[in-house]
Image (cartoon, rainbow, N blue to C red; front, side, top):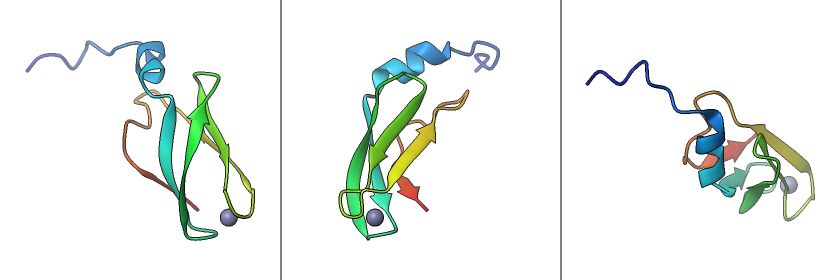
Length: 69
Ligand SMILES: [Zn+2]
């Protein structure tokens, strides 16, 4: 495998996923936060409405489930 130097542009990565499944540890509930800008995911806890933002890094947050702390 010699694809290490071939990093895809962030824009391509971030366009794939429109939302991120997330676990809000503040209220022990699961929810989704959405990618509006292509740069970060934004959303609110469905119970306490606490705002949450997750930035999409160079490797992207990928497609893993996230836990809000
Ligand atoms: Zn909450």
